[in-house]
Image (cartoon, rainbow, N blue to C red; front, side, top):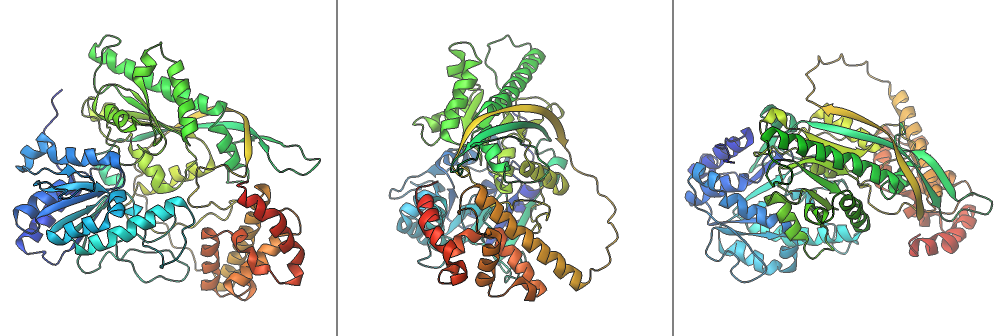
Length: 616
């Protein structure tokens, strides 16, 4: 099938006008360009537009494109090699996917590398940036947090890796002639600032806010609502599947039953059972039920499109629709692979269903085949394909993952919202996302429907009704050493996500008296402290008993230096913000030496620390 003549989207036209002004000297002061483009909105063409204009005008000598993972290097090369865009722009630029060898560009217009490669050989890439006037493209820049103070310890392997990337990338950014920063989200799940972007001075009780009017910075935005209006992305239908789960809870005291449940996934608010119920569901019968809905929805879609094209069964063709399965871990991914293949005739499953995880030697080959050929039609992965994967044929996603940070979910959603040029008219295409109907995913859906993916979002207040505070990020891990027993799906409902029409702005409510606001904030603080105590006792993060909420209140007072009864409004807001980012159980050492808490301190040292060290 011949691809239609390409047309530029609004953010691509804006960048073209901006770099033309930079090339002519009208916008010569611009040194950084931030392109906040909704996932699936077409970021990969922006480096081609910028490099073509700026190299031709002599503003830069070469382009260096840095991506977060190795599988994206090929896509960057393809963006420059695409024959239709070469004809549209009249460019002949090529870049190469480089390893850490000398002369990475090898006479071409530049090279593509990864954050990992820059961190492994920072001197090489810094020398390249200093030797040539460089357009530095930093792809998915939200992966780079502002490094912590020297000597500070990162709390996880992921944070340590991201910190190493940032420390290596910072001098390369400073040496580059022009920086082009690309991202589908301008916030990190951990709330930290993003490397290379300007921020306003921090206000008490508020998160970091970008300084969009900073000197030398040009900002280009492209929201989901704009992308839908331009038919750049597809509308989304969510298939929300509710279920029940039961599990064994380790460490129960004598006389307690170790069995917990069944508990519903679709509770109205986040509870202490939400996380273990989801953990169990994704590894037992519920996962098979959700896989089945996703698999047979894909099968029906492919059969319908074959019928519309008069294609015989078994004939390979592009544009029939594919299924992407996002698993919670590699062991579950392998189990899902076996299940999916069992639903196909012998031999077909091996061809049509592939696995791409970091533990697979042929993962990159599986990804490339899934993107570029008619088969395989199903790909099972964990995280390799959730971000940046340009596979427009993905029409169905099985979201079998714990992770609930909004940037992560938006990226996963975007795997199915790309318009497939092989699948017929835009009106006939739609993204279908099957997911567990837990309250955290429901909150994400509501926010997405309300905001339609605006590129720069204000900080959101968490509802005070939640019984357990949401931890950010909500990692894929065993919640407190439980043993999954069984689960099953009990209901499926569909919801079509469409842009909301603008509504008249409501009248502003009367201002609340400060005393009422203070009382409300103190109540929210009390609920947040009690919620952490309930959750930590349930998950055995700390020993039970001895009025844990009372001890946690004492910890909070010592950490913040003041009790909530004497806090000002800004101090109460700052205390709530601190509780959203921190666990009181990590600061119990503040009670050591106080005779009022001597028993609990001894118990913590004798029971809690050994359990924590053992990974329970």
